[in-house]
Structure formats: structure tokens, C-alpha cells
Image 1: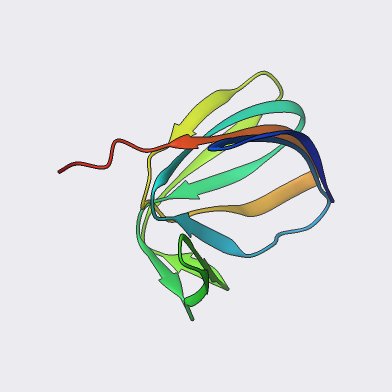
Image 2: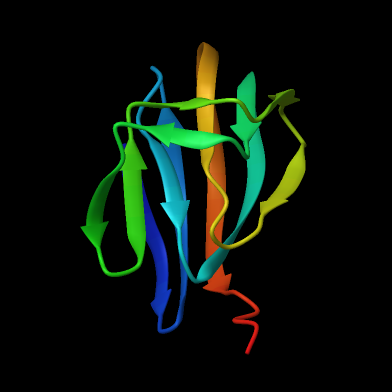
Length: 109
């Protein structure tokens, strides 16, 4: 479940409640900051999306990630996913409640 907290282009913030593993994602031109409010799980970054589908000009989704780095995350953790980086909660221990903030990436020229 996702609840929008802020929509002020090009920024957005969401409150997300995860009770099960969902799709993996890549945001082509956005960095995404996460703050875990409650719960725990395993978060994967890097690697490659499995069965990638482009959902719009700026985003891709996939069933999962092959490769990448898996890290346990829990209440109080704060981390950043750079633009164009696959990311995914591969495991949820009961639930994860997080706040995510999308900001423009560096857009190297």
C-alpha cells in the first residue's frame, strides 16, 4: 500500500506499507531515499531486473533481481538508491513500513 505524502515536481515522498514481496524497480533519472519506519527485510541493489518491463519513460519493473547485493534492513535504517540502479525488497519479515523520497538524479552530461 502506498500513500503519497508530497508531490512537488520533480520531488515526491511516499509512505509505503509492505506486507509481501513486490516487484523490483529501476528509476532511470531519479535517486530514491528510503527510511525504514518499522519492520525488517532484505533489500537488494544492483544486478539485473528479471523480465523487465518499461512502465513509463522513466521507470522499469521486473519480477525480481538476479545478482546484486542483498543487505538486511530494519527500523531506523536510512539508505539511498542511485538513479538507474535496480532495487527490490526480496524478503519481508512480517512487514516493512518505509518512507521513500524521489529526487532528480545527477544526469551526467
